[in-house]
Each structure stands twice: as C-alpha cells, then as structure tokens.
Length: 478
Ligand SMILES: Cc1cc2nc3c(=O)[nH]c(=O)nc-3n(C[C@H](O)[C@H](O)[C@H](O)COP(=O)(O)OP(=O)(O)OC[C@H]3O[C@@H](n4cnc5c(N)ncnc54)[C@H](O)[C@@H]3O)c2cc1C
Image (cartoon, rainbow, N blue to C red; front, side, top):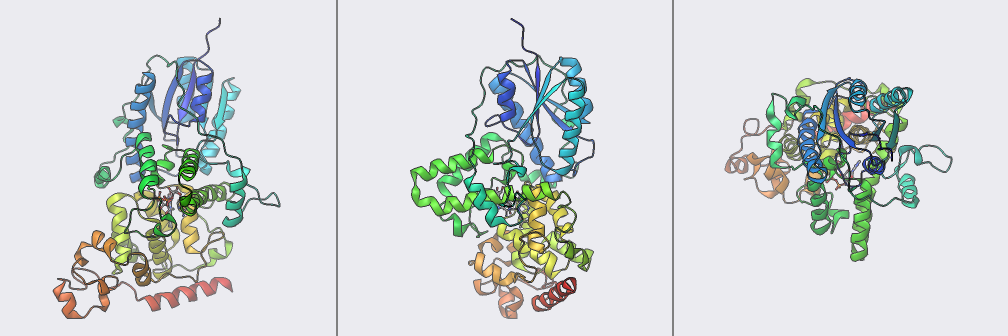
C-alpha cells in the first residue's frame, strides 16, 4: 500500500491541540505531520504589542510541551516570510498539503490568500478551517442578506444558528522526523525592556491553563455574572480573553461547556446567557472588522472624520501612567500596566475619559492598549474603542459621557479596587476615596495625602470637560 505523504499543520492563533479542526483533518490523512509555527516578519500585519509578545512566547512554550507529550514530536519554530519558509519546508519534507485555521485580521487575510494561491500553483493542497469563532464572519446575515450593524439582532440570529460540537485531540498521529528549528529564544519575543516580566505573576499561558480557568470561572465566578461582571473590585469575569485571542481555547468549547453547566444547574440561566452574549460581542467585532477592514484606523461613521481632537501629549501621558487625579481612572490604568489586563468596566471608563474628558483621538488609546494588553485583539480593541468614542456602529452615543466619580461609586462602592491599585489613597475614608479633591484638608492630612504632590489634583474638571466634549461633538453634526 502507498504510504501517505507528509502534511504540514501551520499553527497561528490556534495554539492548542483540543478542538483544533486543522489538526484533526491533517491527522485523518495518516501522513506524517510537521507541526509548524512561523513568526511573521513580512510586515503585512499590525506588529504585535509587547504584552502580546510575552504571551506568545509563553504559549508557544506550552504548545511545544503538549506536542512532545502527546505525539513525541517537535514544534518547528521559524521566523521570516511565511510563504518563503513554507516553500522551503515543503521542499525539505516533500509535504503535499498544508492545513491551517483561519485568521481574520485584514492583513492576515490578504497574506493567507496570496500564500494559498502560491501553494496551489505548485500543486500543494491547502485546507483551511474555522477554529477561532463560533461562525465565520460572512455566515452572519440580517434579514436583507446584509452584514449586521446592530448587535441585538446579530445576537438573536447567532442563537438560532446550529453549532458544531468540540473536537477531541486526535490520537495516533505519525510525526515527521526531526527538522531544523529555531529555539524559542531565537524568536526574540521578549524585548530588552522587561516591564512585562511581572506578567508571569498574574498569568499562565497555554491550553491547560485556559481550560482550568474556564472550569474555575464556571465553578466560582459565573453565579451573579449578569450584575457582578460590572464590578472591577470582584473576580466575576472569566479572564479568558488572552486565551481566546491566542486560540488556547475555542469559543465552541466554551459554549458547549456552558450548556453542560446549565443542564446541571438551570438557575444559572440568566448568568450563562449574559456570559455567552459577551462571547457574541467578540463575534460581532470580528464581523464588523471583516466588512470594514479600516475599523482599526478610521471612524466607522464618517461624520467623526470631522471631529476636532485636541492632541495633548502631557494629557495622554498622565492617562497612560495613571496620574489623572481621578482615582478610578488611575486604578484602571495602573492595573493595566501591572497585569497586562484591565476589567471591562474600567476599560469603558478610561476610554471615555481619554476621548471625551481629554479629547484625545481614540486611536491613541487603542495603540496604548494594543501594546500593553495581553489580550490585545485587533477586532475587539478597534470595535470597543470606536464603541466608547461614539464613532462605531451601534455605539454608545457620544453625548453619554461617564462621570468618573459616579462610575467609581457605583462599580467600586467600597473603594477596594482603588485602594489596591492606588495605594497612596488607601488611608482615605470611604466617602472621599472616589473624589479626594473633595476631602477637607484635615482629612487629607490624616490620610497622609498632599494633593498635587503625593497624588495629583484632577487634570481636568468634570463639568468643564463635559461641556467642551459636547460642543466638539455638536460641530460634527452640522
Ligand atoms: C476600550 C476597550 C478596549 C478593549 N480591547 C479589547 C481587546 O483588545 N481584546 C479583547 O479581547 N477585548 C477587548 N475589550 C473587550 C472586553 O473588555 C474584554 O474582552 C474583557 O474585559 C475580557 O475580560 P474577560 O475575559 O474576563 O471577559 P468576560 O466577561 O469573561 O467575557 C468572556 C469573553 O467574551 C469576550 N468579550 C467580553 N466583553 C467583550 C466586549 N465588550 N467586546 C468584545 N468581546 C468581549 C472576550 O473574548 C471575553 O474573554 C475592550 C473593551 C473596551 C471597552
């Protein structure tokens, strides 16, 4: 009997063995498999931020361990131009086919389309799959067979679409003999400026950790999620975002595990439904990006091209460093710098503050998040920034301007989040912790605080900022 030819499984944003459609399909050929990761240096895509690079390093390490454990095989690491590297690899191995799971960033779609064409012209088969989303962006259509612009009907439609079951890890894979690979260190993902070294205190990358995190969340975080998900001082969201971004866990797996949990405990219905609707926001962002590839750079709504931002480097810096004088904003920005992650409510507050109080272009906030978030994701980040800034589709209206003090009262009622991330305020009594500028001098003195010295005075006054933002917005409407 003729021996099956070798095949390549090209890992990208699917750094897992479970529920991996490309891997399962490759295994069915019975040919020896080359497991490959290529760090793309061809510059066609948004360059990864520093926190993402850290995560990728740790995640590849875990994937290589799993491949060795399950298949006694190696993960071949390469960097450079993926098309050229795949061509070389095909020559060396005589592979006849390449399998990969699809990605959806506009630059990556263009790159992959070109590679697919190139390989096909050389009689190499290419098989691609959906592993990152519940459904492909183009599978969602509204009643007029058009892309969605509004979330609610999108979510309703999603719930009617049949979903596949998660796939098991394929067994009995034949691996290809050893080939030359770069070492993980040679990918140089960890730059010389190691601010992110502390990230390892907060995160464990990799598929095992993702699945552990999901279990933990469904055991102790999901109850009350619908309401408590808004509280940055509590641990009631899943923190699965970086795992999802790097494909260490699939949304299909999360969805099906949630359904099983619900069968066991129907009282979680509202909470699980709300959690799944957040996953649907992720799908919606990908859907928007697919049909509007300029989403990361340009306002979705053209009227916002006329908006006059007031670029101010000092204001931007104060925001980035968590030194705005608004405790909830500063707590959130410091949480980000320390952990590479920020709670969703905090993200909304700081994004509103940057774009509306400080009138800084949303793209500057998007860029900062891109560099510092471990879950930096082109679709989610761009869609969310535009949502808060008011320039996105189905966005929060521009004139809804968060009052940071009221947001803090509502979502960090005991000031625990503030005390954790802005320790210089921890001695302030609860009635002043959300607005230290309102505290009488004796109270400040007792709490060891000198405003303007040990903690900043507000860099802008709320009512003034609100009026200025509304005026700037009014001009775009004319
Ligand atoms: C200004 C701004 C920027 C953001 N940038 C990113 C980003 O770069 N990457 C990113 O993954 N998310 C981003 N988000 C969305 C959201 O804040 C995070 O996904 C969420 O905080 C991650 O925490 P979690 O996993 O505990 O969420 P959970 O509440 O447990 O939600 C589960 C999953 O659903 C998805 N999700 C939740 N909320 C949203 C949302 N509003 N939009 C899209 N997907 C969502 C995420 O994949 C998340 O992991 C941003 C939000 C804002 C307001």
